[in-house]
Image (cartoon, rainbow, N blue to C red; front, side, top):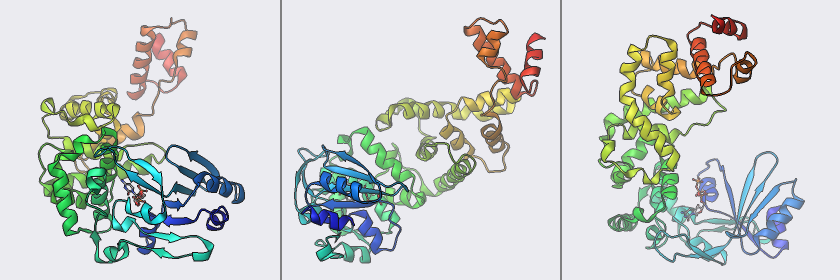
Length: 399
Ligand code: CTP
């Protein structure tokens, strides 16, 4: 349908990028990207009107549109374009172009293939840079010598593709990588862009393989001031992944930044007073992780001394969620610390005081810090089993 609609508007449409690569490998295609030779907005709006009520969002600045179908399916449309990078690692300036030129601006040959959706050439396969052969030979190859300098995030994207599809760096691409690294290219990237790529990397299912590759690509300095011995680290990472799975299984609707758990594990032994490399972490999360790293070592001994369930809960509460899971990952699943942390998450974290602020005011307490303290005491009493419901709470307060 889309190919016909686009052709009627005189703007041929192509399947392009990762979905073509995934299709050739019989992998599922979570994202579908379309390249349009012409006015993206007209095509997107015509599709939205003609095809089963897809919602259309158009971004004039980027010349892109998103079509969201009622069943959750999403199509990304982009105008075919060439890019010019005014400075290394800057965001590109773009100009409309034909599909051939659009393909060469991309990162790797395996991502520079297209399939025509035009009814007259339906299914025609465009592979001007040999992406299919590289995929068969398991080679990761950039399209031009300036690729990594234009956009250093491509180095981390490449690492991800290498791990996901078991690719080797092609020899001249390896040379270009080494050259880019000697120019300290990552320092020019904004923190948010670098962090986004690192997060994708840390969340790869085969993170152990990704860490091996990180060493082989000489990229450890991106994550840590000193490299880690990968072997002993892997056991911790696997335990971290177990705890992350455990959490998602029990709290399927709750958000957790998996990468923050893994990064806390990776950063656990760094002397933080001397360390300033949080520049690439969005500020709030960075602060949480630093707080956790300062507190983590004290928690196990404090837990051993805590005499009441409320004291135990307060200790866990002093960590962020990723910090808790990172600590559990340091102990076997059967350890008392792991059990205590999981119990806190399952049973204690959600408990609230049986009486709320309004109830207390109705009992005659004035609003203010005092009321906050009473609420905290009620909360602790609930954790310690001294009260269960509003009635027992009232009696407890009167006593
Ligand atoms: N692309 C690029 N350079 C980048 C980012 C993206 O050239 N820094 C191009 C590639 O052709 C890529 C396409 O844009 O295939 C779509 O990008 P994206 O959706 O981020 O990645 P995919 O290749 O689709 O891979 P994934 O399966 O991880 O989504």
